[in-house]
Length: 124
Length: 124
DNA sequence: AGGCTATATCGATGGATGTCAATACGGTAC
DNA sequence: GTACCGTATTGACATCCATCGATATAGCCT
Image (cartoon, rainbow over all chains, first blue to last red):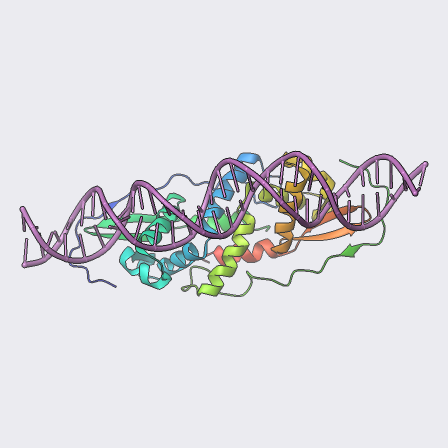
């Protein structure tokens, strides 16, 4: 928990175009090709960690579904470099977006990213 | 692809009670507790592998959403022990059920298992 | 019985992954 | 400028994991 002294111009990082999970038919419709399976597996791998799931849920529960990195270290009880690493994994996978405001880094949920993965796992 | 000579009494294995993914509020509703995050992560880890995703999709696309293990080795292009290992991981995680009929092992989709994971990832 | 087939398990191995301490980078405040 | 603070990166380490060959187990058929 830190007090923000500065709220300068927001510089959003390049939004991830990966979209590795919004391309194909649901998993249960027909046999997956090797490349499609690989893309979905990469997305799922990014989610398949307790710490990362908690980070996502904390961000999602925050104001505007956005949270300062400074508020994310304490709740998960891990070192700052480790949390930074997990946030990078989630950002690279397209689940979070990063925006720097002065010294502070803010992470926000990418709308629809989780849902597109969920849709691939749903049979209906 | 093998021809089945025998269709003896079906002995279904104990159905997995784990249900690690059908307990709580969606990921984006409120911050996840440590144990809940751990359970969901375990489920996602079982899914986060290209080979296992392909195995699931092949089973799902088969007659009655069930397939003989003998028909699952060739499509994924890996050794028999490796495929057997992946099938065990998916079965232990509760996504597949195993039933032995004579010499052959049949794997079927556990209804709703994928959907309950997907529901946890969906914001709506 | 013995041979054959399908599947699971074991042991080893190379590669990925989570974690941390130390350090580097970048920006604010004095 | 210098000092300080937040964050990212580096390097190291231990653990986990996917994969295979070899072997074990179990069931069918002749």
